[in-house]
Length: 475
Ligand SMILES: *Cc1c(COP(=O)(O)O)cnc(C)c1O
Image (cartoon, rainbow, N blue to C red; front, side, top):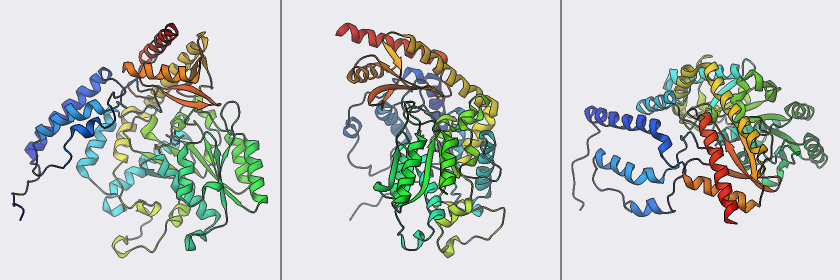
């Protein structure tokens, strides 16, 4: 027989208050001092696993012990994504107002699956997404819904598109070969989601791109016609405005024409760069976005909102609803009211976090102009450093820099470039990542953190040059 012990009571409000203050103080210190941390964790694989107990605790432990272990054991194994010099992948930021929103969301712990399970959760999502809709130039009446990530958002767009092209598939799960198109530089989530929607690997076309890494629209049209001739059903094309490797911009007006001509669904992936449509001087990159059947923008990337929060906009919300419609179980039946939207009827997930609160805080705290000013600075600092890099005899910029990402190379081998990234990252000062462009390994540096400064960018460029000189001297 196991020994019976007293049940651990819920944390008392007094204890919660004490530790909440302690944790918030730590959070404020972290934000103030984040530049002191090495951006990239130096932890060895398995290091944390070996240091933590292999079995869970039998009895409850004190918050003091737990927090001490967090600071001592967990923090050294962290890579600091909220560091202003996190320049790899895409920089992200949890801004102060966003963090406060996230804290309240967890205290409330609401599940906004239906309007009536918490009316304000549904309505705040509708209101905030409608503000952003207007700021990025989507038509009135566009439906917005929050998903955790762009990956899950595009899966839903594909399901809605499949419903439009071939509604019978929902009955028996089979359909004629349906083909989906995206550029070879499109994000991998599109191909993954196509698999998830039952499209099949052989029916995913990654369209070749031009010298500036934009989808070759002539090739798109050729592939579509070839598939039609072969009896396949081209149904979905994704245009990426701001690709993941190089932030290249697919030729949207041409792609719209082709999609219309063939009656296909047009998806726009603006997960990273979509927010730049808020700026008049960059809006030309997004010309035609109002024609899209679906659009994705990720506030958790370049809109200072803590991960996770991705927006899927849809021209026709009824197709989305139909694509996942089942006989509603009795326990979920909700009274119909034209103004009471049940978000869970528009996606695969039932449970929904109260994500819009942090977004509402961010949008109100900065305002449209405040957001635009920060994004504008990021782009200008990157375009400035891109010029300096390209003017340096040992470096070259290898792609246009329409937004806040510069792709460049040290004029050497791929291995030299990999070594250069490793040496920069090893210093802990900044974090860079790499990618393959045109068959060559290149260095990516992207600026998007709300606390980043011009000096963060410039000091990192100085460091890159210093590491390169050291490398050259060692040869
Ligand atoms: C990052 C990115 C995605 C994936 O975003 P998640 O929210 O992490 O799924 C999709 N498309 C583009 C263009 C991206 O840059």
